[in-house]
Length: 515
Image (cartoon, rainbow, N blue to C red; front, side, top):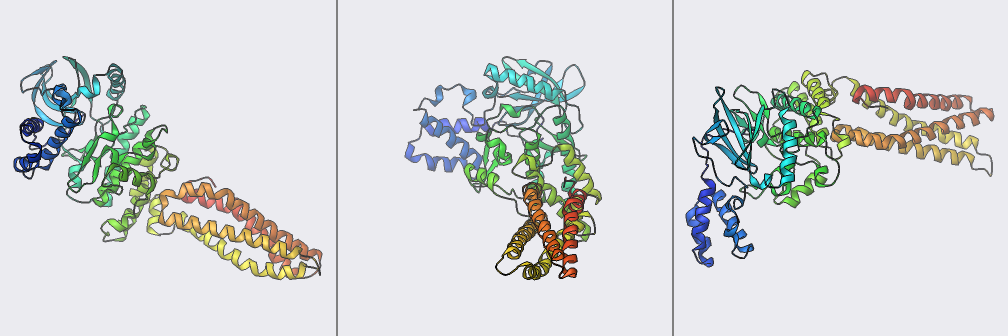
């Protein structure tokens, strides 16, 4: 509900655009480009807004000026600005703090209490529909019930002359977007910020509120370093696809660029969509670049739906010590899990994310163990799968020898047994190497890949175990090669215990997953 306190607010921006738009209508169409270039100079924002007004005028068959004034603004600001000294209920307006897609925000004095407040005046474009007004009241009332130091307090809702106003805490600070313009942050700074945001999201999600519009512009840091997450309860009012900002180089920013994949379809939306947006915010904070930005909305959506983020080590400055490297790689693992395309593969909740961040920051979490390569559960998990692959490869030698002994003239039992065991062993080795690669290179996809691979891994291991035991039993029955029989039977028993007991235990210890 609060906005950035800009040192040079420009409340006259829309009026300037409207004035220039009206003057441009008096110029011959063929001369308008030159006229706008002279009048706008280097002010590309003003030029873009005036051209949008001219385009709308042409599309409406020159009837655009018959549209109510408050709908002319492409940013959907209020039909008119309150002037300094004007009263909105018990609040006296001092000045405009900022304006944007949802309306205008004023700084005002509370005449009953000695405090300053921020008043968000919602655009009629969002509140003129009765059903939308009622939905806003319900969701904003729920947001007002939130009590968390990372969420600005909402004091009340005011209806004044047909417009809706939200009165809330006045917060001085700057948004993360302004921080990003100064460059990337260290892994420790990103994790600290992430923990504060996750804490605020956890409080909202526990109250049944999903933000749905988390982005750098909606996250503010106060001069004391405290994080405030803004605009809870307003996301349902937005037309997400139209809330887009085009940068000077043509890249797409705004709400669309921080939407989770499920928000582009009809899947249910829950708190995990906020975690996806948070993952993007953290990646951008660490690298000073957005991983999915395209030069048009379609390309941005396509990248969100189908592209994996590059590893942080490819985009982030290399830390100067081992501890910094470990924290960077731990952060990479956490971000990747937040950015999983499927909600089920992300953290189950903001509380789980907070726990992972706390463990990673302390150096005790699975993510930091994986990142640093130090001894720990994940190292033993890696070693287990690697040794299993080598063991399967080596056991194919005694299985080949057993085939020759088992086969009687004219029979192919030994060959069939060898081929079945070989196929199962190769399948098991490929799956294990795939899981090792996923855990090392794309940890955000590990949970999904593990769940998909586990049934096939257990089937292949079961066939291999059966092959070893049958081959050993056949050698004993034939009263030949007792030593070879003992090797194959022991291999079958050890392999069975490995995938039934040892492997689930190491997996739970390393990744907190059921084996």
